[in-house]
Image 1 (cartoon, rainbow, N blue to C red):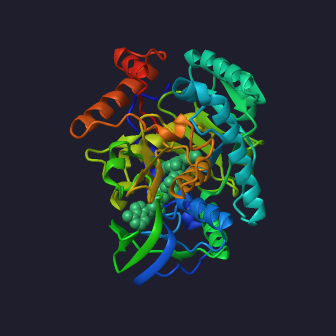
Image 2 (tube, helix red, strand yellow; image 1 turned 120 degrees about the vertical axis):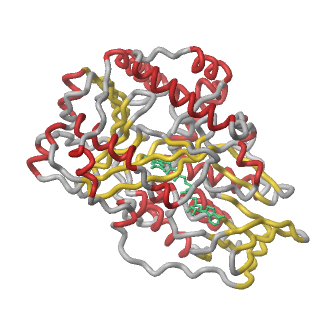
Image 3 (cartoon, rainbow, N blue to C red; image 1 turned 120 degrees about the horizontal axis):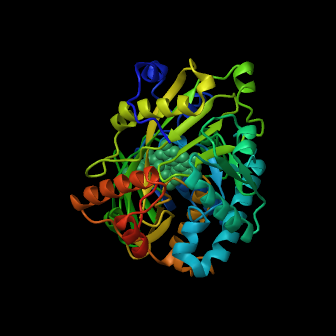
Length: 472
Ligand SMILES: Cc1cc2nc3c(=O)[nH]c(=O)nc-3n(C[C@H](O)[C@H](O)[C@H](O)COP(=O)(O)OP(=O)(O)OC[C@H]3O[C@@H](n4cnc5c(N)ncnc54)[C@H](O)[C@@H]3O)c2cc1C
């Protein structure tokens, strides 16, 4: 399926001059940063994290109660985390796909599917209502088979999607190559509703501006060091200041959690991305891809790729890198072995683009959990709530996760907060060093399954039976 030779010097040269920074953040119009917090601030609600979870939570909170004093603190700048580094695939799924949802939340799947579509529509409506210019394109998503054994999977996937009312097209090799010209394709499935593409950097900044217009006070470059219970309040202790808040909502994703026990459920897994320079008209012509869908391979180890608004190709995924102890640090945003492999696989998929160069390269941490979908928790006697664990599919689901976490911290009981999906936690990962060993073994077995015609060996079948897994 993929070359078993090492990447060549040419593969490496293609990204050697790339800017080591997320493309989305590099193309943002300049803006003055919000000030860091110094001294004391009071708030009804303090949100930690200026990614999509934190930003949507700020918007939801102000919409529900405009007079509520809402403060958002971000350790770096808005969109600095996964929210400004992702592929920009907007998926309505709250369960990392229907099959995973049915395997884990069968009894609630109709509800979760409906909530996912409502949330997707809500995101589209909010983007329009707030006037956020973030290149939202409702293109649908194409999953492509790269091997014969993957074709039946796609047929099953299409049938499942249709059962849930999706408008789906199953494509044979010829039809797939007519959509996007790659000699590697054996077929595809095009899921149209509830799948879109966005510029996530512009979405994050646009949401920040919308939140500010609603009256949210934002502080950037304000890392939170700890939470401490004070009399009838929570002290959010920052580097040079403190927020005394009635309630706190954490949207800190794969970063070290401020509620320690949440860390049992999250493994920070690094994913890496390359973006090409803009394609010429002739290069685009040779590709087809006129309907601009987002694409992903069907294998366990998969790439995701898409066109950007200015006609580059974003190409990411495949290696999902877990490091011992789960560190999240800026120097881990670069990984030459992964960039080289990504470059090699790109030219294998699109040999007609030989000679094109990559303008950007970066990596980012994904908050992987064992059920591949957001989970929730509270701490400090219900005054603190968190939502994390989106496992690489949070661009859209964060809007939902933020609403649920906000309901939890606001003490509101709703049909959604009563769902097992909300009340139950994923199976925790074991502590190190077992955690690292288990994840490495699972990654290794997933790669082997891809090589062996999809056949899942004993280890993966055991995990399946226990409802455990590893994904990005
Ligand atoms: C390379 C990559 C590709 C991806 N592709 C897709 C995709 O195409 N589609 C999709 O749906 N999902 C994708 N994802 C996942 C998606 O980006 C995330 O699920 C989503 O952005 C999570 O948002 P968040 O707000 O929960 O976390 P983040 O965006 O990570 O935000 C957390 C924020 O909290 C801040 N923070 C952390 N700790 C502290 C602290 N102590 N004090 C103050 N601030 C703190 C961080 O600086 C950060 O800005 C991808 C992720 C990555 C890394």
